Length: 381
Image (cartoon, rainbow, N blue to C red; front, top):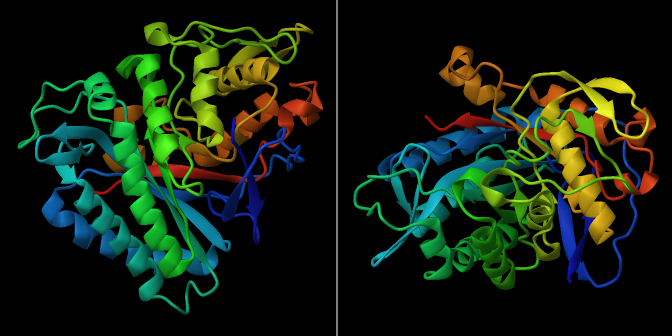
């Protein structure tokens, strides 16, 4: 199985440190974890906009964030654009974005290039020496129906197994990554927001196999999905070497989600830390009760068990929240799932860091929490 090493350049970043990825064969190299200190979160976006308005919005946003954000942030940042659901038609590939608007692959590529170009072009003094890296994200949903001119009958399973949606997204990312690297020396990454309730685990595995077979080595998969249903109410912390597997929603398994996170050696983890509730959690070996966020415990259990079985960990660099999106629509519309980025970061770190005695084995940290950061989702409109 191919593995990747991330070689960091510069200082800790807004959401991920600029990295050069290189292939290698041997066992994963241990890396020391940082302290739990949090730096800040990148502004990322749920895309909900018509094709006719995409270019102007992306150019305007690139100018704004390049001018007003890059000048006082660390040397490199990552922005996540979530384009929604892939969709195949006889005339070509589309996504249906989070507003249900159809976007072609070419429109997505042009829009992302416009954001990157504007970010670099108009604020050369403000962002001098800074690097922008971009993650382009789709999901495994078939729920955004009736967006003309797209049909509403093709399932995620058909998109993957008949038409090759994983290969298609790799083509999009490869095009963007080649352009962004050759033009600005920045990287573009591919991602899929995998949700157990939206498709079968085997269909997601097939998507990953297609994507990783076709993706450039520098364009590796980021896991930004959920782990719904795993470990029940997540009020017990199981850690190496006593962790256990768990059934999750829609017949997914905790080990299956770990393997999806790993993505054939291309994976790094961007866990959804939307839920802000804090509960008493029992540490399995000692019976000690601590206060943690159950969603953080859920991911810790998955990672602990995956490490116990597979013997290595995917990189875990950043948490993902939607605090800004909740502010935009009104917190009353998403009360309880408007976790702030620093709170999400701290609870994920506490659930994993042996320095706080919640995980007793040093190896569970190897390769994890190398950077102190988060990404916070907002809306294009």
